[in-house]
Image (tube, rainbow over all chains, first blue to last red):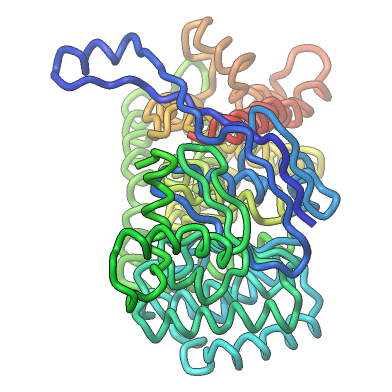
Length: 278
Length: 260
């Protein structure tokens, strides 16, 4: 379904040093440094998988999502998703995906949620009966009934996130990219969002790629994780395998038999240390 | 086109959430060009005419260019305010939707308060038409209509050009106002009252001359040579938007490869 091979991407970043003099100097002449955001990233994702895509801040998670959703063109490498190259056939391709940026809204701020949904229906050209059945399902499973006629600016963050996720699924995409969907949510909303992600994955077979810093998200959702750091792929595989790999050494060092298996956060920190990416 | 209407509807609903500010701004927008027009009126009161142009001929120019400006400010406000769209990253959102970027940017903002300005310039235009010494024919009416359309295309083109610059600079460029506000101020008079190079610049580089001066000659029957050619000049003005759209596409491609 998704095949990414050898994707590399670097950004030019203007060098800045402190002080008024260098600030004035940079007005006229700037020096750039190349920062490699992605370095030879390759992986394959099968239909119906939920993949947790993790890494520290600035590791290149969002850049990968942007490449896969057709926003950015990589410097090198190929990416085939459902037969499309995302950045070449943008318009035809994006009809098949849904994207949620946790930190940015896609809803129209001043109008009731339902108005945004109807405009999205028109933007994606969704058939009326398909829209109606999707909307019904989303309203039921995400419990939106009471908030759908409220202007977005009056919603709480948790309510808004549920609407965001609904908005990105109105056109029945086969792939859903979730960039930090649980950021800033309280416990109840987090659980609701997680449960919903499992539901649409099971019932509609939607492939889900999710980035997050909340390891409980990963534990609850993803059978498979892809870990990147400083633009390189560090680990790709099963969560349990990862646990086993790090669990024994942990038990040895901490003498005492009653220690539980290390939490995901511990494992991640250890991995970062091992790969020297902190 | 239908989708654009849908965009308008949702923006209109948003605007109606802030009714007081809507009415105040509309009211203000009605009187801004009004003061300019009053200045024009008193100048003619004093001098009678400028280089053989009388008051109603200039008022026609004024009405056409201000109407075109008001319409394009309404419609192309998304391009005018494009820097904010790039700076806060909302442009990424547009790129994951299956529609052209131009349509989506146009649909991102619509300045309803400019109706005040539109109304005021329409009134001036109507007054000028009723008083001017022209024998109206169907073709002349059509030419007049296309003068406004052509003006809208040119102003929109400039907005698009300046929006494209944001892909490199991120910040909005006030420099655009030289050509939009400046062009509007210049083109509210017939171009031949200016220095040659000014007139040339606004005919061949930014073709405001095609919006009013050249077709105006045709309306007034002052053309030399083929009058049909003058009648067609507004169409030439419309073409201005094509290179602008090309440059826009180039800008979008640049954005997607650098991801500023």
